[in-house]
Length: 114
Image (tube, rainbow, N blue to C red; front, side):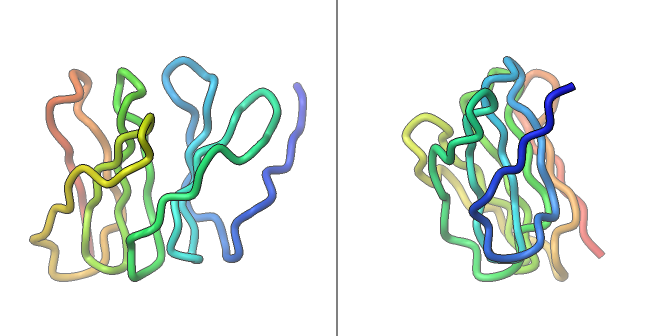
């Protein structure tokens, strides 16, 4: 197996996963950012900013077009992975979000917190 180091976050990386097609990687960090990477080259494609707390969880939608992120700021954010823009911010948690994921059909998001 090939080992590659993705360099760019300024804090601990708390969550990382591949896109469904394996061509991209998404990561979340204590630096309050979400980054999308080219899985083959390791190059940073984009940095998604908007969380005011550590990003604790990231995931791609099943079709790879969206990213969900959960954060210490008690928000779950949905991002368009192609345009790299925030689509929606979901509120309702009373503490930091520890996990966020898409449903298998991509129509819903589930999240958990302390």
